[in-house]
Length: 121
Length: 107
Image 1 (cartoon, chains in turn blue, cyan):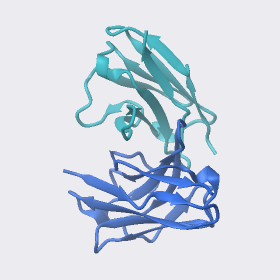
Image 2 (image 1 turned 90 degrees about the vertical axis):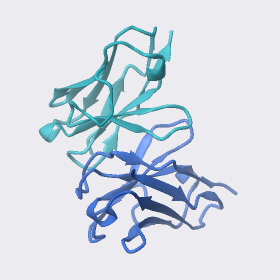
Image 3 (image 1 turned 90 degrees about the horizontal axis):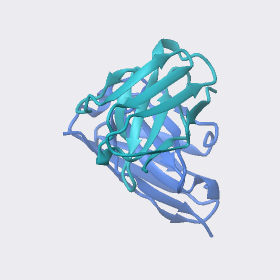
Image 4 (image 1 turned 45 degrees about the horizontal axis):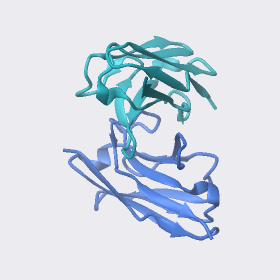
């Protein structure tokens, strides 16, 4: 059974940093592209970033480019999102999501439970 | 960037009724690269439909997707109590974007 366990969220001040983690199990982790998708309180879904199975290709939404870094440790079956220079508008639940193939532009067949990031002073 | 517009914003229906949700793209989607998700309060979204019309594993056949080009539709043939939720479309043909969602509520 595929499982994605998101963690690392919390309260951080504007300008601060936070690292999210997603522990994956139940599938061959390095064979699938992975993404982060976020949802601001009471709002819709927003794609944030994607990484290929090997980690060699990464893409970002314009809203986070230059501030967020996605990476993965395939030896630990773990996906990360390093978030720097955080802003109030980054406040959201962040979901780790899995694509059904190693394709960076794809849909998502499994979602983590989400981790809440709150940026506030 | 391709913008997806979902309508209506809210759909008020009774159990057993048919629900028709629309998702319109600002540009033609190549190869019908469109997916639909269902989200219930406090839960992560769940994949329903991919490739515009293919049901995901375990999704009941009362859910169906159709459309091509710029106009796509999710149809729920007979609403069950567990179907009242928010539905999102997503395109993956050019970058990755989601629609704003349609809430299906009990009338």
